[in-house]
Length: 255
Image (cartoon, rainbow, N blue to C red; front, side, top):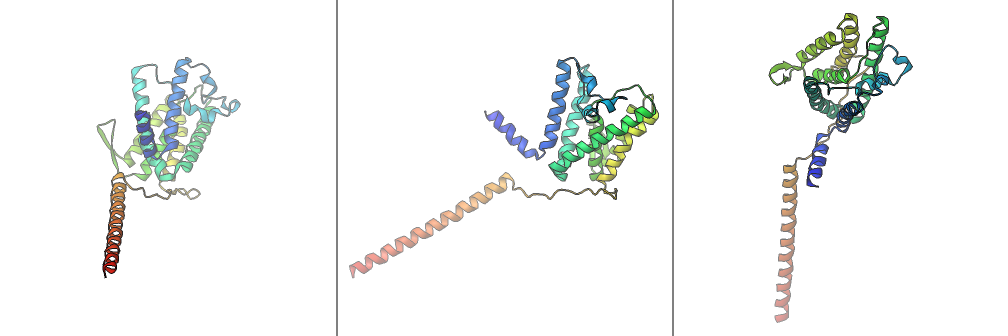
């Protein structure tokens, strides 16, 4: 029971229920497709016939199938860790409701734009996984942390601005493999997400949610000890006053 209580306490401290839920749902979906040997996954992938399956413009993000080999598992694990890091930051800054709206809108817009490119080029390909929606969240993080330096893969130092450029190049190469123009369709919504986070889209303004001031555990303990000390002093003063009156009353009785 203590382990469950510790997990609940840790979960509440994250302050990002939507992002944590997204991670859990993506991992759960990948395990489900693994256990069922990818049965029915074609109905959720983004492909040339997605207009016949309109839900696939959104559900493609939950079709990760990383358990084919060790490298795929490692990449998937890194992707979830990155979503945990940058997604938690973005949700705490935007607020949970707006973060959920951003994920829904960006995932759907990316799906529609990529589907348009697939049909224009008559490309016989199908896309799945959450890499593009997570890249949209990455663009927001990079726009809000342009000078912050991280260690990519644990040893490559990159500022937020350069991380955005590297991510766009990787997306272009992956999704433009065999169809270079399709790579442009893949990166276009991500560029919009970056400018949205940077506050450069006239029609859409990025607004950070009001920050609530939460006292730390040490601060709470200090305040509690302060109030306990005040209460103790008041009780001592009342006791002294009671004894004084009792003493004065006994003197009057003696007289």
